[in-house]
Length: 324
Image 1 (cartoon, rainbow, N blue to C red):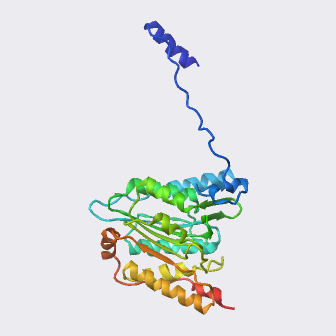
Image 2 (tube, helix red, strand yellow):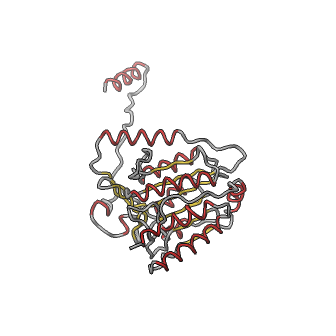
Image 3 (cartoon, rainbow, N blue to C red):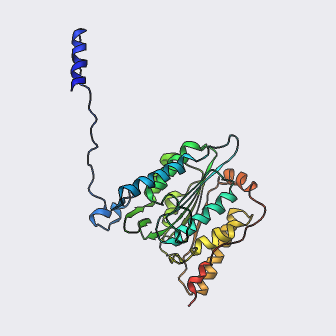
């Protein structure tokens, strides 16, 4: 108030009229509570991708923000005249199988696509003493994508994203961190994030039940998307004790370790999963593959720089879950 009166007095002394400075206004409430809060199970409440954090201590929240900030700040900028890949590997569920899968998937993908200094891993504790990392969450993933959009050349560089978590039918990817974090990343919300950031060149690898629901919303001529299951099927191997899901083991731990084209790796992984499911007498998960017509513009330069020697799979096979 004193500042406004002082400014008004100056204007009056100069022969002008007093000016009332505009005050910032809080945003208006325009919609009701989302379904995740109200208990409404309808899909309408989930389209916007609600996220809820509950009961976290102030110290843990501050520590998490510091880990996230440090990881995003360390991301290297793109190299001029070169197609660079930016790898993000995220576990959106606190079951440790997802953390183990996300950590190793980041190593495999960063090596395959020459992304040293340009990779991010978001995963909670892996139950085996692995390094402390920023937690996987919808917020962390969204901020990572926004940061990558800042440092990449969106005309030529590529997002390589691996997400591993549970999935919900007709809803999307489920974020569930113990009893403290909950949320849903719907196909509509995910598409809006990527499109809004202008990230057009993208390799999306989604390991979750019902993850095929994302294909229709995310396909484009510059997008390659591989999912662990169709929109109506579950995928397998997500026991907390596992090191890999079926999809992660077949695709990342085996097929993508080899110096072979993406399409061949996808075909190999699909046949491997079919074989495992038949051996276990499981309903087919029906993994989905969509590779856009213009993906080769960014994929060919990356695959030309792939390591020429395969690496050996690590961890216990996902099929250990089928043993009596």
